[in-house]
Image (cartoon, rainbow, N blue to C red; front, side, top):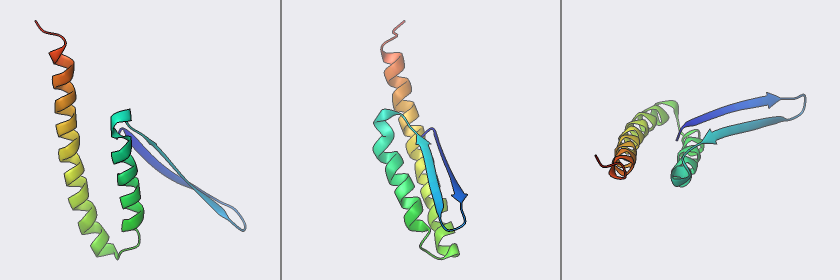
Length: 81
């Protein structure tokens, strides 16, 4: 995922929550899973959510690094010296 931003607009009798996210087309499913998981984690208690978030962020960092490494390998495979 390249970026994800959430913002809201409050009105007198209603509101609007917006989420803007971007990702490589091959990672759209994962992006949606991340956003969905964040919504689900908002239903838990603060301590529970914090622990889950830290674990999840760590896992996503590992996945992103693996994806970046595969992409780099694919990019360099086509440019042999």
